[in-house]
Image 1 (cartoon, rainbow, N blue to C red):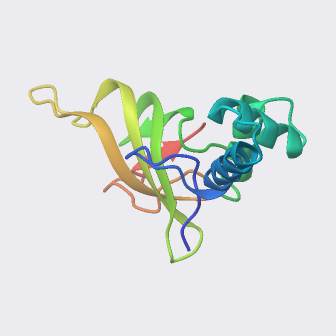
Image 2 (image 1 turned 180 degrees about the horizontal axis):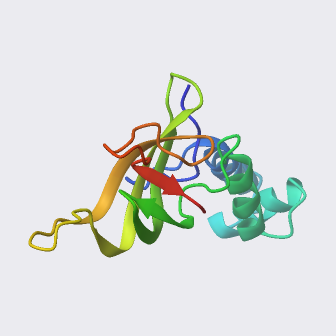
Length: 155
């Protein structure tokens, strides 16, 4: 089962937000056909009010909360912190997809600062962006050789 998100990495709108935008387009077209044309932004504002929100931005924020995968404390676009290969990080969630295996999510995180994933003094390997699998608790089921999770997201 795929989780709907407001926006994917490619910029495509999906989920509830796509439905609201479609409603705004239909409203704009209908109003134009009746001789009362409205701009697309005005139609977006009207759709937001129709759904009980004061403006479009409030509706977008509310739909992002609804699209958050069950059990996770963050969604796409959130700033998160945690540990990757036992190194502290802060970063932004670029993608979050529920996996068909249930209870697991594929996450892409772009770190604010590159993380050195090698613990040797004579060698470094920096990562700026990672792809990982996490559970609902934000912890990767995969572990390093010393038993620590590859990724722990504290949100």
